[in-house]
Image (cartoon, rainbow over all chains, first blue to last red):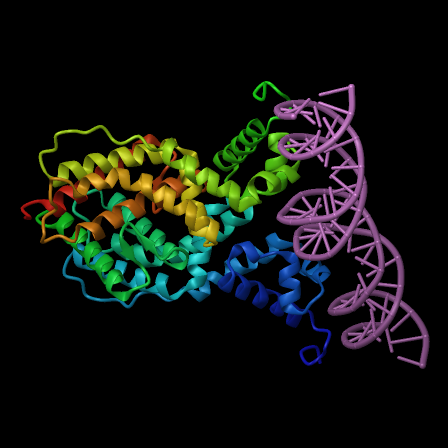
Length: 202
Length: 202
DNA sequence: GGCTAATGTCACCATATGGTGATAAATATA
DNA sequence: TATATTTATCACCATATGGTGACATTAGCC
């Protein structure tokens, strides 16, 4: 009975991944080392090498899980126009960013490191990322007068930066990102930008 | 003759700060440790403790220098309106961000760490930062219908994120931040946002 | 000159990191 | 039951980190 046994590889692997994931979610990538993972999992670090071949293997495993964790797509909705849709999706994305510390830690990791293992993680992350904005390329076309990808990149970049920034210093450019009120201002400003940009455009 | 002497405290201090600064500019804050600074400066690490009291002292010193390094204000100009001014200043700021790797490393540091020594660094950085956008609060008032600080925060956050991102993965949301062409798209998109937001507003 | 204080050198500590080889213990297989 | 293989433990290595006490050397000063 392999599943009730104390010595169970699958079970140990799960413990390792769970520990690594929680470490990444709570402490960030800085705390993600072989020793700390082994300690947190209550497992000898040798097993991390035996089962995953080292950190890269663990990261790859996490990258795979990532697709499932944040894989839920935004609820399909009837959108009136491109601006409405973009605004709605951006709002949902911002909400997710603010809720999922893990996601912010991964985004910060992407900014800090450009090792090979990071690239696989980024790929998985950007797949889930794409789930939100794939819809933008759907039935509703963006006005051709506007460089929608560039506009979206600016808005997304801003949301990434501001949510990460909220975790540390908490304020930026006069905004207090610890308060719900100022987050509402950000949200409103983003909506204004979208609506003004696409107003009367085709 | 204290200045030609081999044993010269002021000279040694300068070497330490120079090494630390270059390390920060070239390698980023991750590489900023006592041992590496001492090695790069060709100085015994004990002296870093003797003269600066440790890393915090070094960082404080760098923070002070920061005000001078990036202290040059944007050239005063006659602006027609708030949108023109904002667009011009943002363009200048983006240019500086793209040119100064050091600045990007500090911004990333601010995102990653929230220790006390970082707060002093951030203060100095945001002073210089303010030099650019102080002007926005100048004679030309922002239209009261628009939440200008929130709009500015979004644009600045985006520029920070995109310039940092260009150093590592180099691409984001469909843009290739290694190419001048796509940076031009970012620049144009930002200008569009500013002009559309402030158009017909008072 | 010679004394004192500043400046710099070096050896050492504790701790943490990633990584591995040899061995023990439990499990599956014959 | 006996054997072979998987699973896990442990001791150890090399390296790097921050930090300090004891000592050597040079400088300025009387």
